[in-house]
Image 1 (spheres, rainbow, N blue to C red):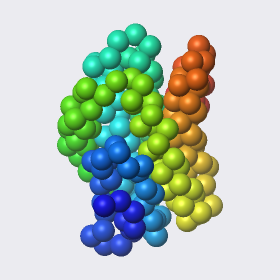
Image 2 (spheres, helix red, strand yellow):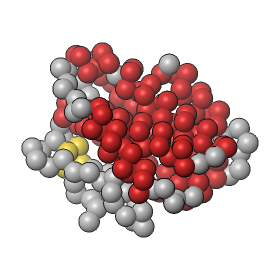
Image 3 (cartoon, rainbow, N blue to C red):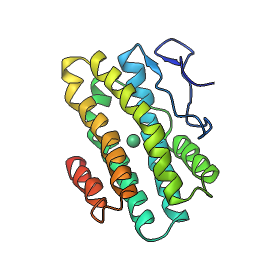
Image 4 (cartoon, helix red, strand yellow):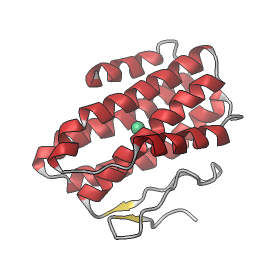
Amino acid sequence: MVGDLVIGEKGAFSDCAQESFTLSQQPRIITDFVPTLQLFLEEEFIGDALFDALANFHEGRARQAFQLMAEIERGVIATMGPAIARHGLKLADPEGLREDGRREAEAMRDMSWSDFLSHVDEDYPAFVDELEQLFRLAPKADKADIQLFLDHEVALIDFAAAEQNGDPKSVDILTAFLQRVT
Ligand SMILES: [Fe+2]
């Protein structure tokens, strides 16, 4: 089942990443800022390892794009350092999170580049929705960081759309975002 997953209520964290690709990812409902920020940052570590591993399953343009996506994930994590300190977040062990990412990649090993782009197109808007919810909950001091977090998902979606449309310069969308976090 998808939908009606609440983040912020004790014990209700839920991992949607394993959902079937046949149904679009549904946004989780976010009620608390700090635990959700922590969860999303941990998901970035998973994303970093996921994209890095997927890069190894692909060649050429797809490989280059996955490498850039992994760099973006790492850049977002690095940029959020002050917020992590400000809120005293104790993130889960990065190696365990990366292991989760590699496992996810393994499950996606046979996904074609074009199927991956469709997956981004269908499922990543849910993450944007979640980050918009988080932005609304964010204290003033965190708004800029959450906006950047949101923008990185939008960059991935914009890239996937451009790539699906055969735009030869689609990768520029990723490199332009990367410059904001490196
Ligand atoms: Fe990400």
